[in-house]
Length: 349
Image (cartoon, rainbow, N blue to C red; front, side, top):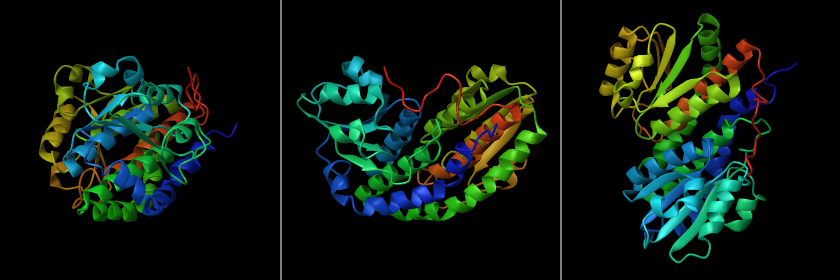
């Protein structure tokens, strides 16, 4: 059995997918102006399910910071089942559907549920231009984001990057330059990530895994937590970095991998948490823009570069090594990351 023949090249080709997304946006400035750059909306609501919801969290966080406007992220089901609890009535809302396939039942139901409501406008982002979502509303499309495997990898990276590029274009500031720097770094990060993850998995046997991230990295922490769970059937958890200290840290003991997605904005605080987990016996992995004396305590450090750019612009650089960690963990367990049990590529009700 050839395990991982689909997932492996999809993780490895995400730099190409990011480059294609960057070029694609150049022809969709009309989309940016009509939706993301349109200041007439009181709130922009990003929705998705599973990995797409975690993308929505990153997108909303980036939008709030770079544009200084109100944005939120919700699971798609909250909009068609609990809309008034999720979004206040009487506001002018832009609803942004996020779906790799564009066929997730929940995102389609959410879009349909607001189509006749006053003050609601919809748009979306997907990897499939002929999908049900693309037929319902105007979508950005990641040209090389399509995947054959069940688990989202390059689609997540490329769609997140594409939406961030749209937000940067609307912001009209240095953020497009920051994203271009991240784009230039991505291929090298991908190339180094697999060997790093393979060594980490082959040299250790972890009983528990916890991913920690703050700000826009909270959505990333949830996503990479899901990758390990989906691909390798490992029970893992994710938390806000400082929130982990308020009770959940009781699970930490020798044999626990604690992976911290280190920002530059809150670096000192996040590293203090990591040091504390190390003292409790955890194996500490840091994914960070830069190694230094302050990271020397960690058991393992993966450096991605780009310390001078916005944390948000650097977001997709954190993904390759942790996607490969899920992949390599699956192979070590003898399970197939291409076809996780109980899962399908498109979830329908």
